[in-house]
Amino acid sequence: MKNNILEVNNLSISFTQYSRGLDTIRITPVKSLNISIKKGEILAIVGASGSGKSLLAHAVMGILPINASIEGEMYYNGVLMDQKRIEKLRGKEIAFIPQSVNYLDPLMKVKDQVQIGLPKDRAKAVQEQLFGKYGLKKSDGDLYPFQLSGGMLRRVLFATSVKDDIKLVIADEPTPGIHPEALNAILTQLRSFADRGMAVMLITHDIVSALKICDYVTIFKDGENIETAPARAFKGNGSELKTDYAKNLWNSLPQNEFIDMEVFK
Image (tube, one colour):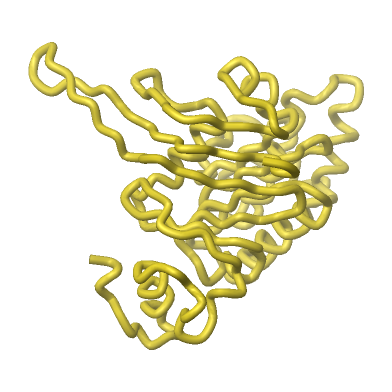
């Protein structure tokens, strides 16, 4: 646990749902997860849709729905986190960059959205500083979300989420379906967070992009972490990887000639 910004031990997430009438069923899509991230590191959480990646992020942020229950322990800077502590840290030391740009209010100018939660006497100045940091023009602030490109909307999400005192960044699929130039800009920004001492959890299905910037990769399947390996292990035929699933995932990529596609079945 020493030096870990975030440590998750034996985390399971269950949901209670109604089946027939008042009968309920309990499903557990996330089972006994273990991860840790140190200061200055990027951990990529990689897996197919439905593998439990986003549920992990929502658990750390304390935003699971009311019918969810969790088992296990989560530590931030060595201190056990409960819901009350999560709420104190959320947005102050722990930042969440959501998957969808629809989190932005379509009826509010983007500059006003970035200023939410900032001290009133400094809100405008800090917002303009954040715009500069994330490559947005001052004039962009007067636009509404529908007037911005996908890449610009992603940068606005970064500006609304990642401010000066943040220690842990959780980015949930920040790069889906965007232009390669915008993709590289986002990856560069995430790497810069780590280089400034933040811990970064990058949730993605795009292992190729993640490997450009991450230090470690944790591979998820059916709500379980199959393997955590250093980024440097993903090379050649994957001989440095420990599990067959991780090796098959790596070898199934186009640049590895789709050697084994069974991993996706």
